[in-house]
Length: 501
Image: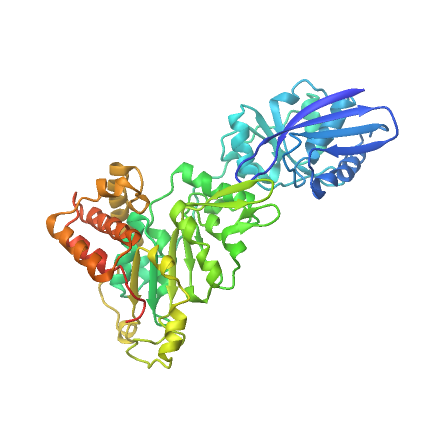
């Protein structure tokens, strides 16, 4: 009888809880049992492990093999436990040394030939391994991703290579990345947008304070073009934000893409997307579009065409910055701190209020179309504006003065955001409770304006606070310590108390 103990990690949302792999071999009728709440892919690992060991030239024990994945109440999924289970069998049968097994955490799916295939969620795995002060043996495919954690990484391609490492024949090589971490392809630039100065101003305010935006305009007015350029003026991500964002992609079905390291995500799901696609879910919960947009932009084009219940699922994440997916056994939380940018037509035909074409919709059709977006949802959107189509002359004879580049606008955004972070350590859009009155100081005329708006437009408490926060951002862009009347007036102008002219 012999026992071997190794370490790996499960995948539970963005967490990678430690899994202790205990392999026990005893005499008796040949049997290979895996305990510890394994799902189907984990149960099937016994077939992959047996074949990989035999194909690699090792002896497979003809006795009772019991593998326990502890803790027993933690669900285990995927093929990541194949490699540690195989090494556990080899250690229990004295085909490799047990000496250094406790210094490593190990993950990898085995092919029948003994080749080691990639796993999902390598970055969260590596981050937790680093905290445990261990080294990580991982498939070569995942090495660059895991290296972002600054954990000691030993990449491998074959089971034989790992065995040679533990038997001290040919040690694995510590991974050293030769690729730059920041090699970003160019983004769409604000200078490519002709005219639309008010829309650009609104997006500059949104970027400075982290505010949500609704753009209403006729087809072809440039709403999508403007939204796609918002990430180019957002402040660069910190390393912590970049790790959070890319960790979400690591555990999702999206491919890990190193060229996106440090770039704020821009997600634009189709209007036929389901609620689960947007917020995440599944039998083994995975992040949805709102989490994939964490620290970036979620753009919902044709906003009223989304299903009503799909739109309503955004309400809680917009306020809390997170999404909780509840299951009978466990609840998994994903971060969802994103900027929501929506675009819609003013009516079903799209030409209500247009100068060049006549709207063919009845008032009932317009009302039904606009009522697809509920009052509580509109209440959570900070900035609302109309985007008008440009006349043909604007394209045939463009202004000789070039539009501002994203780099120019971004510099102003960074300065305004820096004022907010120095003052409250968070962007203005995230101010809550007493911090709103503490940091949104009004002069006398600004106070009068907001009081008039409260009585005239029946603003909700949330709308009142959002208006204050937008005015605070406008004041930051102007470099003013207090909110003045002109800042409040502009903020009220973007409140958008109705979606039609």
